[in-house]
Length: 80
Image (tube, rainbow, N blue to C red; front, top):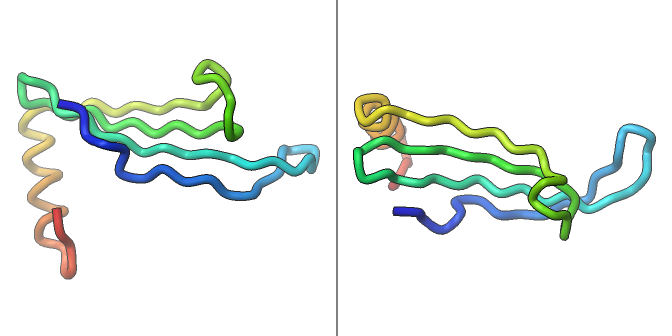
């Protein structure tokens, strides 16, 4: 089950050589039928093709996903 992106935002930035740009970042979670969870984060220029973005992905086993959910749920002021 794929959820809506948790965070999807654009912000002003600049390249290493100082060229102004607008950057877009997306943080996403996907729950797999086996109970594992995939957490992904992509960053790139606004409107860029997916292959032109930086992409990082973490896969949590069902046990790791349960532990992560427990930790997040017990944080003061946290809500899931």
